Image (cartoon, rainbow, N blue to C red; front, side, top):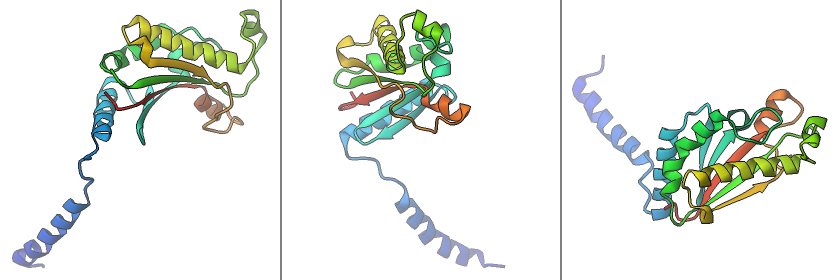
Length: 182
């Protein structure tokens, strides 16, 4: 059995060493702003609806397509409105940060149903989805001069399109916050 006095003598330096390993608070105001935005958005949106990642000088919110759109569609549904509405208070507070909305699809060609509705390609579908998100956010009071929308179709997959699970990951909307984080 170890003597309690000896255990305390050993534990104190170990705890001091471990405390020194903790990530220090950032001195970079931009990074602190993004940390705060990350925490706000994490509190507002459920992990099963979106993934929130801190990047160098950016914050990226990736929304799964099943949360936003009916299969093969581009008009946002009520569940999408509810999910996006959770982001609105944080996005409304931004004054100097661009909000870039990007749409992506899997590599399955557009079917005849979508073609009849005027959708000509996956690029077109992804653009319509990104535009729909921007339009909704604008209708909720997010500053339109800070937002842009772009569709990428199937050109930037994050998973293999060979499986249904991979294709599902590739069908997504990404909101990237770029700028000072305020």
